Length: 113
Length: 112
Image 1 (tube, rainbow over the protein chains, first blue to last red):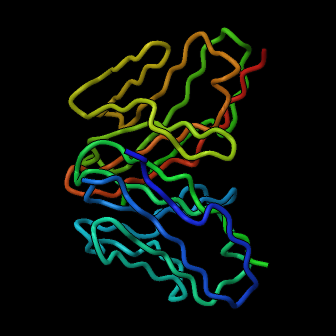
Image 2: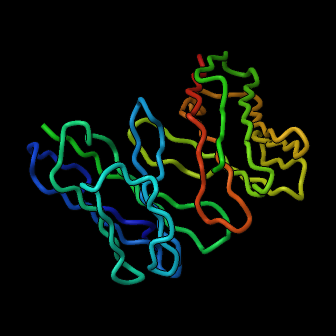
């Protein structure tokens, strides 16, 4: 298995632009998680899905953030409009529902200038 | 919700010494406690985990202990090596809840 695949690896965008981050979970995993990592706040859970259904989005910082999971093999995290304070590494992770640890993707390093 | 506290935030040891990182959790319903290692610029990777029905688990130079009564768990690394240098995260997850809450991380430096 290729693991959790995220794209792009790096994204530099101007303030106000729309940013879309993508994630392909491990085949067979039915839970998917989006985390944001910064020096100041560590690893923050933004949202997670079970069987493609959003379960808890209380970590999504603002209405500018939205996430979708149209099918079991694909999820997106969108920021519109982006702001410099959104600069961070965004990780996607997947797991079996209710079992074991997560497998993280390589992350997307987002820089908003 | 679950709150995971981790300390110390930084730890420096000499090669060959032991390192201990400690975490506490707030929700007694938590039953799964993994540890992740994150090297600079890389993803967090699961290195060991423990479930609430076990008090201790060991894997070569790494061991975890769990005290359910006190709601704390620890990571022990023996005979540390320079390649153990990384940020280590503890986490806790509840039985009927699939999300996981992470500690703030410990930056471990092993000096050769």
